[in-house]
Length: 90
Image (cartoon, rainbow, N blue to C red; front, top):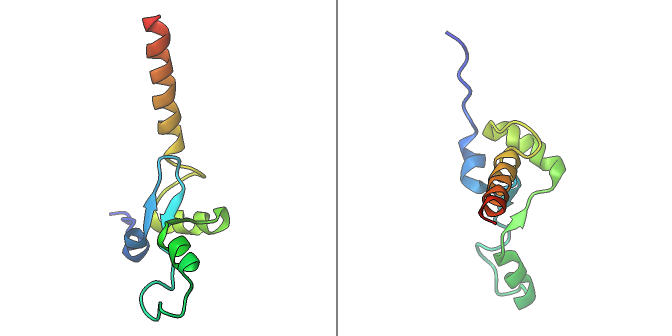
């Protein structure tokens, strides 16, 4: 019986994979002691951030995703099929 890969559940809970394979995450410094942070900082930290490509490689390995952008191929196929349908309709 071979090895069964188990993804890192901690990373899976904290990251979300976008359609093109990028990883979105929540920012730090939002849980407590927010009164001494400026409103501008709190607004920008409230929006999701994208992980840098260097860190993405490691996080994708933790999640069991293969390739540079794993969902991009499916995304491009869907766009190509949609364009083909519109071309056939004309």
